[in-house]
Length: 500
Image (tube, rainbow, N blue to C red; front, top):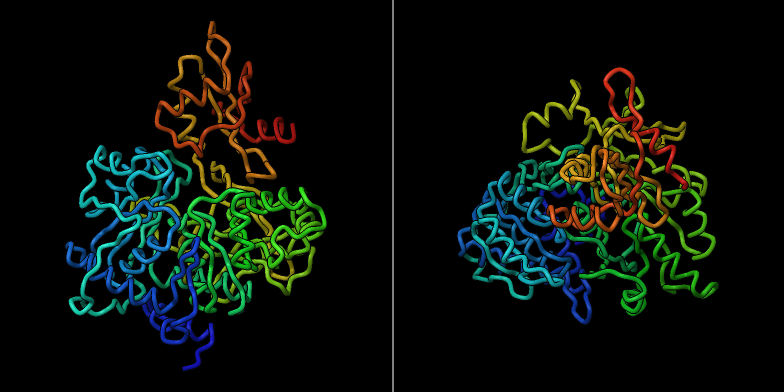
């Protein structure tokens, strides 16, 4: 049996891709974590046993299963077991708390909820009980297993909605994004064929596996037959030992990851921070050209950046064929089958990797134009070579370390503070994070001085997730407003505070 990665990408479902790769290279490693390894064949075999265990618990094709688990081998096995069953799974980022998790459970009507128990000092099980989660069970080290002979046939239709991912979008509540196996396969294929890895490469997954990038990256591993190191908790320099021990050749995640590696490199100039590393790759946040130049010059590795979102996991990607100027100043080119149209400056998309819409039909109707193109809310232009340059955003979303943060959600909570009269939350360029969260507030007459510590303590008490907390506070006499509708002019705030 000798199939090329492009032939494998014709798989109709994720489970079909797993089965075909397991038949090709059953003994090659797929996931590496600490001193453990799982092979391609091992994934297929164990996922079937776990699928049988889940089946015995009552999970059936079409059953909605939510899971909030860290990046571990067990998490990937559980996810593929659900894919084997044809269940509808809704991954939840591990650091989300009551507000987002409760919304996801209610809106998805999840019949089961899988948590890690106490993880990094937080009791996920207690939170789930507090939220009234149905079918609650823990799956950190142990997964339910059974006899695969009881299983129904694997799903054959890759176009059915079997994934619900969550994005904050432009409103306070998250939006449930509907994906199919085929849309995730298309996104992962774009990433894989742009980066052109080989079976000799070693990748890394240092971001939450519950992110849309989890299946995106795993599809690339399955297509090209190479392993990735999983990091349950990622921090530098602590993680460097694992990168070096496993000989990682491809690393990254988002702009923040590039900056972190560069910081470590600068501690020992001229000595490769990871000797085996040849490529940093990622997306999810703006990439300053100067950061590209610094990585290539100081680390001696290539950097390929891309453009994606929860609704479309991979839209464009820089390629080894691109010139340094294009790699530094663009987001790369779209793959075959991804249509990009610029309408009044807005980037619109149509193709197999585009989601089917949202759980809320009204949001779906608003998101797609009359020709079926997704309105991204991002502003951009196409070069003569077909490369995409992003120039801004229509959406009021801050992208911090690759995660979408709703400005309105934070503003709504700030308005509850007695020392805040009005508030505007903006994203400001930041080399390490992509963007940082800045709260600009007006105070009512007679209010006492307001500090960043007081604001973040208040927002924590209101239930805001830690990753959304402002890193900067500016107090002004009056927010700038338009003359007609008196709307706050956020672009004036960005102009004022960017670079200061």
